[in-house]
Image (cartoon, rainbow over all chains, first blue to last red; front, side, top):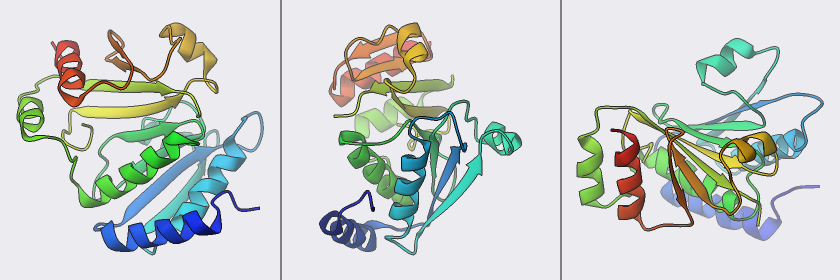
Length: 142
Length: 59
């Protein structure tokens, strides 16, 4: 049973066709058992990838593909790394349901455009950064 | 912000699936954003405030 309904699928197909620039890779880490939402997350990722030629899903096993997980700095699952022309450091941990699904779609588009969409003063301030910053945003499914 | 800078990386973390992390970071209400494990902000704050917290964590 698809997770994305037909109306939403059509809407997303159009969004992606209109807005995607660079190809996007959804690199997903999962495992076969002992992971609450891994199966659904994987299904969701594959359904999203099917909505555009510019989106590719790559699924790896967190245990057997540990090197890959380390390469992408992934330490928990289910994990989705959203990559465009380069790895901007955008990760989703846990199933992106409810409002977070919208965030995932917006991130796919933003990563594809290579543009953050931030205001000019924010961009200027960020350009002055000299230290790395790791942001973690905790959410609950709505 | 992660897209804007190579120095920034950003994770969305679903709190219910990772309760030990939610505990570690004292997540009671969401969204709760944590910068470099030290600076916190609750709620969906406007961009300038989010930026302020990020800069604070970068010092």
